Image (cartoon, rainbow, N blue to C red; front, side, top):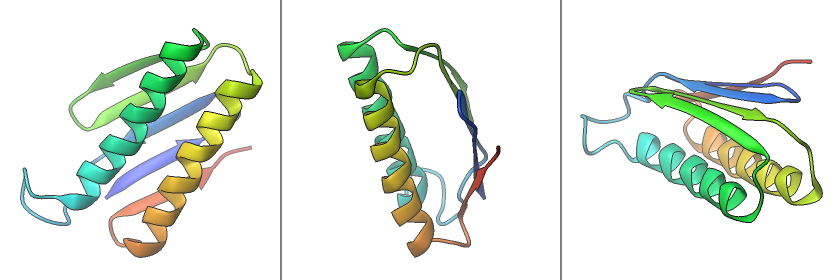
Amino acid sequence: MIKINVSYDEIEISGHANYDKFGSDIVCASVSSIVITSINAIKRLEDTIVFDSSDGYLKVTIKKHTKVTDTLITNMLNLLEELEKQYSQNIKIKYIK
């Protein structure tokens, strides 16, 4: 299962969806596409985040909240929530206060 923990300044994504075999997993591919596209957009427009990634793990830290950064992060989370609705056995989002 892909676990996504979200707090005000940090998003941590870990695990594998295990929806299908490696290389054919549409849930993993969707999460990766959504997150990497969002990170690239933020990095291209503003230098307000840092991220660290390795196999099955990604951590995004928001250094500065701006309208653009927050809008792109919100959009990313909305897309991930829609994916979670369709594949609740494979992805779980937890909001931490």
